[in-house]
Length: 120
Image 1 (cartoon, rainbow, N blue to C red):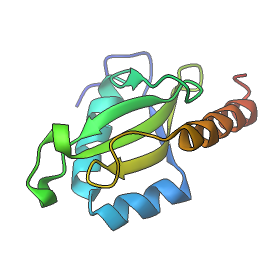
Image 2: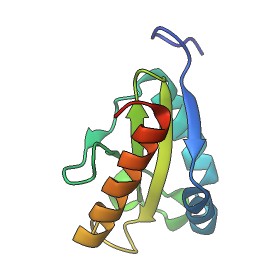
Image 3: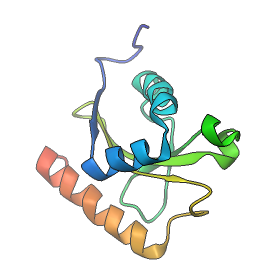
Image 4: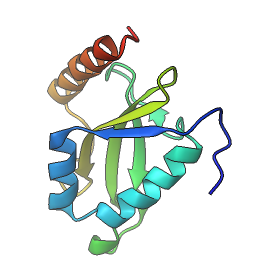
């Protein structure tokens, strides 16, 4: 696969993200999502109130549902570092959308990641 941008994209997962991904059994779907984001890092829509996190739908073939009823992945794209930080994933069977408390926690995490990466 040929990357169309200036340089390859690096992926970083939080420990909580990885644990939830595995618990939901979405490893195969996640690999396909990574291929997409490697080519188009800004594929996900910005999710208001999350500090710049992007949200993208991911199919959940284990539940027999497509993207609409599958899972949601929240990630932070740092263009200067060409790095995507995967921070949260949830199945639509678990909840419909992020709560205000979840958005606040993710916003804090996004700020911390940016500060550590030098992209404040």
